[in-house]
Image 1 (cartoon, helix red, strand yellow):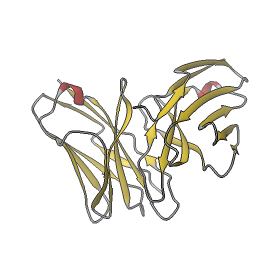
Image 2 (cartoon, rainbow over the protein chains, first blue to last red):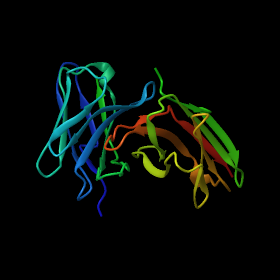
Image 3 (spheres, rainbow over the protein chains, first blue to last red):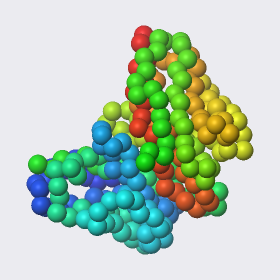
Image 4 (cartoon, each protein chain N blue to C red):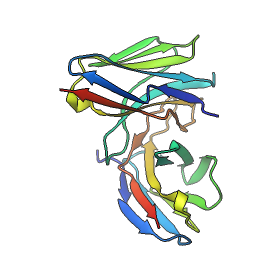
Length: 114
Length: 113
C-alpha cells in the first residue's frame, strides 16, 4: 500500500497570507489527523477528521481550519499567517476501527513564514 | 501542562550497547502507548506500541516495558546500531475511538560506531 502523501513538501509564505496544505491518507483509512511540529513545542495535535466530520480539535486559534472530502483526502488551511506558524505540518492516517489506534504519518509539509 | 514527560533529551550510545528512553504520563485514561522514530526530513514512523494489559512487548531489537502503577513506560533498543541514530518520541492516547496522540518532547539518539 502507498503511504500517506502530503503536498506540497515545502512552502514559503509571507506574514498575513493564507496557505492550504493537502493530505492523502493510506488507501482504506478514513481518519486523518493533523499535527504541528516545532523545535520548541514538539508535536502538537491540531485536529482530526473522520468521515468528513471534525471529531477532535487541539488548542490552536481559529486561524487553523481543516476539512475532509468524501474520498478521505484532507486539507488544512491557515489564514493570516504569523511568523510563529513556521513549522513542519504532519498528517497522519488511521483506519480508526474498533480498538485500532495505529496512526501512520506522512513526510510533512515544511512551512516557512517570512 | 505536559501530559507525557520524556527523558533524556539526548543520548549517546556506543554501537552494540543498549539505548534506554523513559516516559511518564499523568492521565490515567491513556490506554495506548506507541513509540515513533523520526529521521531528519522524514515524518515519524510507528516503531512499536503497547496497551496497559501487558507489562512488556518485544519486536526484534526493540522492547517496551510498561509499569501501570508508576505510570511509566520505556523503550529499550538492544544491540544499538548507527542506523538507529534518530529522534524517538513516546506518545499516549486515550479511550476507544480517540486518535489524538499526546507526544513527549523527543530524545535524540546518537549511536557511535
